[in-house]
Image 1 (tube, rainbow, N blue to C red):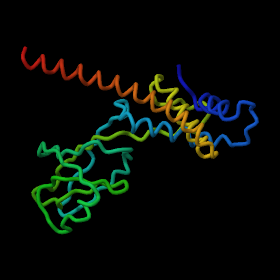
Image 2 (image 1 turned 90 degrees about the vertical axis):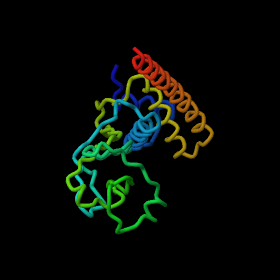
Image 3 (image 1 turned 90 degrees about the horizontal axis):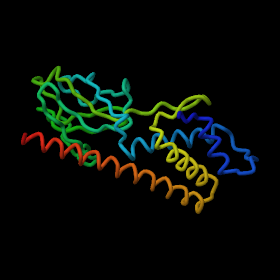
Length: 212
């Protein structure tokens, strides 16, 4: 059954203000609900949101490439598809200390804002190389009452509990906020266990098939 923005908001409201006398605006609740959805996508690395993009093409001597056209929530991996070579993710300290002028075969990447930075600078040999970016897609914001949560229905309660915790925290109710956040964490932990079982099963099947 689809969980609409209005239904989520009503469920959050009844917890925050059981008497129905809340003076908080709908937009206040909507922001916490959208925050909850985005947080869950990141926390669980939901496969439903995994996408790939192959529009980034390397240019000689160019460090930064815009990802605004596909707006990733989180970059999972980057691969030079032309050379069948994965690039390694860098941390800020590494990116800041890397040579500004070194050119060669791109081997590392760093996200800066909504741009993908490549290290070292691509040499002329790598002009036209196509990068495959695997990423988590940013979920669409729920704005209209009938907009439906993009998450699987078994995460409906997680959305509600996170949104309640966020709202209570903003209302300076830390103890109640902590209670609902712990409930949210328990739901996420349970989902992670399911994901782990899926991966173990897939690995077992692959291992069996190697020896068939």
